[in-house]
Length: 82
Length: 339
Image (tube, rainbow over all chains, first blue to last red; front, side):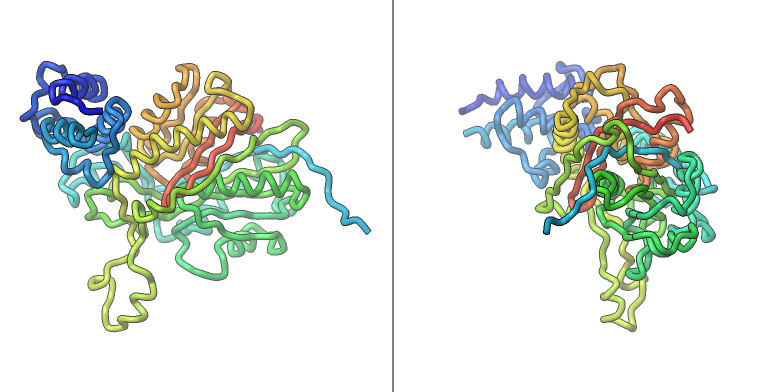
């Protein structure tokens, strides 16, 4: 099922807010998960697993480190869902 | 002529004992070599301090102390024990086994004795085997001991592991019981991910390169892929835990205590959340004071919990061990009765 960038971003905002307690309003495509949002490596795993369930995609362990910014994650999920 | 077999009986954990090395090592002793902070370690793992064994605290001496305490609490002597199962990955000899050294130290060199290598799942593997040995009549009273001296296999300069691993021993006596004291074991492996936690190089590398030493080849210290292990531990192990409960005819609502392998407080808390554990379940957080002692962590945590909360003697607990392999085992048990 094709997903729009806007839908994925909205979903990711909810996930990151729930997992890491970061207000959805501060989550933007250009934000770096670690440096800007302070999502640590273990919380990132929780985000990834929640995103897999929500969007019906697979995000392998070796890809997680490539998801540096929110935009990286949105792009990966949009492409994986195509 | 038919082959005779012993009647099937019930098994239970009769007692628990533990040995924690004397030296308490706070995060402040670890942080300088890995350019970290106490706050960072506590936030990522929950660990505030751990114990490191001294030269006089060996795998055998720590196991012996834990076993002697468990025997005393069960009101048994070593002569009552016919089988000893020892779980470890840090005994530095291939043979004879640590278990045979242990039975000599304990004073019963005639008991059946063997080691199992199932890393952080080792204790629960041992409980599974001991329970079935007792149930089938092969053994009457079994000592299961998890013991580790992981400080010998931890790189103090490794920013991913230096603060995690620790030393200690924990033991239980498993024997016959009027009621079912140990539920069916849910166990297995995800060995496609066996590279996620490794100890390299092989000892053979030293033999093949006699002119090279530890400075050249390194030492078989534990290395692990943190994110991959976290993901497996939380999401695969919470499902395994639920299967162990189901096999025992229970749900999380029937549970009093949760004693998972003490790998990381974040794993433990996220696992409990995934399993939808009610607030009424007491969850062990022994990792805060004792670090990750691999095969020893569950019995040490059980001992800590029962010392702090005597009201939990005899309560129903879910145990689950998981680690290098990747391998896992879990079972519902009735905690021992008060000694």
